[in-house]
Image 1 (cartoon, rainbow, N blue to C red):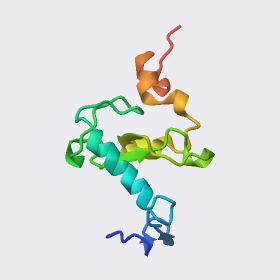
Image 2 (image 1 turned 180 degrees about the vertical axis):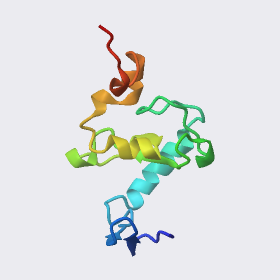
Image 3 (image 1 turned 180 degrees about the horizontal axis):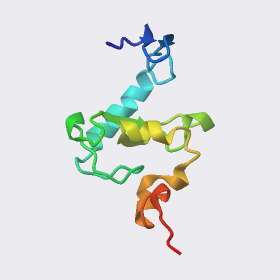
Amino acid sequence: MVDHPGRPRLRADCLTMVTRRTTTQRGLGWHHQQQREALLARHRDGARCWWCGEPMYRDAVRNLDGESLAADHSHARAHGGTRADRLLHGLCNKSRGDGSRDDRRPALTRRCGGHAGNVLEWS
């Protein structure tokens, strides 16, 4: 199945039409793309992702999710943020969402004994 931005897509699992909006339609137009380019120009390969703590690379193939780096708004767009000011893995940016779970990001929970969902308590 090939995705074409802005065109309806048929999902086989539920046979409903899903429309993928373009970045401009999602409010991520030219200014956002310029911010991402500026962040990529300053990026050093191997820098750690703020969300997961794993290294990030300009080459998407080298990233743990196989996706290009995404420009993230530390002050989430859902809460009025307008400027992308850091890069994250594409999957990490999607996982972060509106920023309401920032205190539970994997980079923090791993440092404190592993992912919160994997904690075993033996009595």
